[in-house]
Length: 295
Image 1 (cartoon, rainbow, N blue to C red):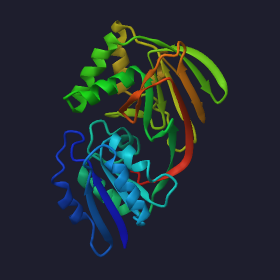
Image 2 (cartoon, helix red, strand yellow):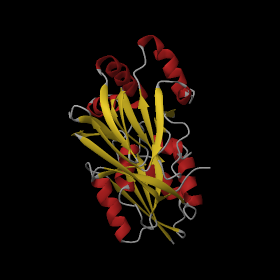
Image 3 (tube, one colour):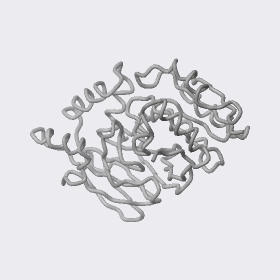
Image 4 (cartoon, rainbow, N blue to C red):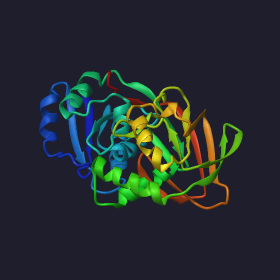
């Protein structure tokens, strides 16, 4: 009998979640699955629940929420025998999109039931004393994450509002980047560290990124001119941003980054803002997480 724990973040995203428990009971035969449901009550609670589940030998822990909820849960499953499942009920759902996990709850639950014995191993990344599984970054997109997390609007429209607002208010920084021992200096509007391909909403910053190649993609972006914003947005939505000269791409296993004048950086981890720091160290952790992926 498979032991499955669903950890539900009741406040992530805009989608209702009160219908979900009944659907879970319907999808998982009680003769084949031992199903538990827990709700997060505060920041960090998802990690606590996931850690406890690992200790009691739970086979699958399903994170129900957005990328922040997934991050909390997945960080406790690294290099364990417990598999991560994702029910994407957050706002952007970047990792779920990348892994081809259905956005429909019924289809997603069916995927978990069908493939709980067939997880795939994917890469993870350490970042200072934290982890990320999809995207982290410094600069403009981190400022957007900060404003979005502190604002009152959810969903794509709320996120897009801060994308436009911060475009006009946020300026360049000069970064010192050590990429597997190669030191470079770059002016950048933002720098994204991509394990998966996208920020969320199926908007891809590095369409060629892989969660199984043992490398993190470093995306060093210039600020697009205001008159080119339409073309830039179109390139993002068409997954062709890598065809534009705005972004320089590098791949590495280990990265150290700081701002040249020593000031602290805005940064985010899987879309959640972190307090500014002077230096960031990133290391890839190859094939360290078992995940139920889509087809």
